[in-house]
Length: 403
Image (tube, rainbow, N blue to C red; front, side):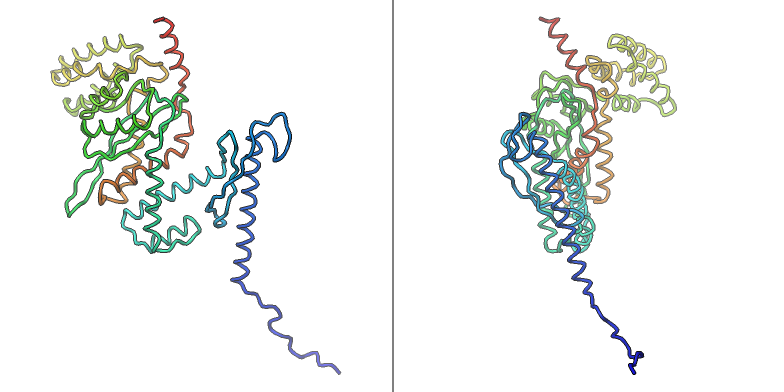
């Protein structure tokens, strides 16, 4: 009689979980790589107007091979075969999507490094960001690579014309030899003929003086900045003179908000609200002539209020705030102040608080540039800011009248 009470083996199948996990990870990575390459091929077909080897009357271009590019994804590192075209420059949403992600990672690396985070900790955080372990020994090399990318972006050619250019500087703390001083970073953003905003330049300036601004404007001009109709900024020391040296045909609009603050410095705190309403009435006028008339009324009222210094300031400087009246009325609100630049500088200050005092000016410049590079890749740069057709129509009409 058979003995059915005999014990069966405890383990019939043994699973190596580590090998299984590696195998599944490899499958997922290969699948992601295959899908992304198919997407690239599909985008190339759309740009060419025909599939590979297809004869079509709608064809607009021809393929010219491909090149490989490594790309970090959530599934790991994949190898892309990026198509090349004969006539057009191949553009893909796939790489752009991950490029924005990489730029934010680069900024985080710079920020961590400058904040004094240990290389071991940076390696841990890098793994969380990239899903790829970066050894502590390579963190410093990685930062050098990040700096190279930022420098290349910072010195790229400026293409197209930018009728409106906003200028400003931000002062950050620098610690050297136990002493804390200031370092200035000068920034320019512009609105192009297409109506979109772009970060045009960022440089380190020893001080916000004529030499610093002249060097910055020379840097912008050498990289191709042209077509400037008006600069918008605060009355920085030496800036107006520098604009005249490099862009003599461009107008200068003094930021209205900064102008108000200058006037308030001559007004008792209890009367600031009243004076503020008076000043705003000037820049709410329907045209330049009406604004000048309103300014005269405000000067007389200030004198009657025994605020002679404030009245003198308004009388001597009001003309510098009225240049925007020479442009389309729908642009006035956005070109009479430096608010677009102020928001960016506020963001830079928020990020720089993580570091505190920078070891040198180059470090401050790199972090500011990294932040600006990231901002330019967000909705900030992809959302239309102004309808520039109105400006083109205005200048076309003026040319006809002169002719």
